[in-house]
Image (cartoon, rainbow, N blue to C red; front, side, top):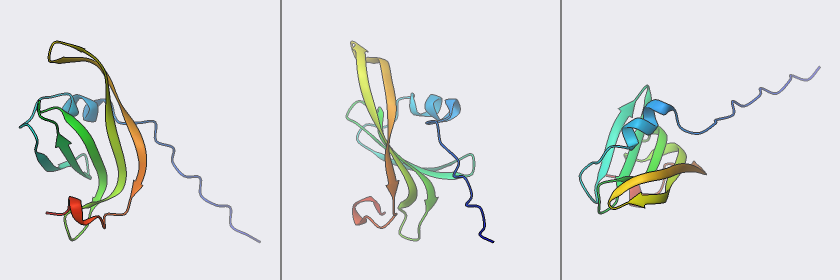
Length: 102
């Protein structure tokens, strides 16, 4: 008798709490390594201090993230303020990329 495979949890994007955190303005052109609700997160900001790249999952020994990678698509601005944007899941990351280690 074969075991029934586990059904993988389907992610429907980022939580509202995480989206709220990522809608804030941070230090421009920087990297931030933090913990958020039990997950390690790393995000990068653009020249305006807006997060545009997010890695979420488990932090590896070299400081990278093994988990999911999201990129932000900014759709509409009014002056320097973002009016409309969304986060696209770009897939899994292995945590081995040397460019993202500390």
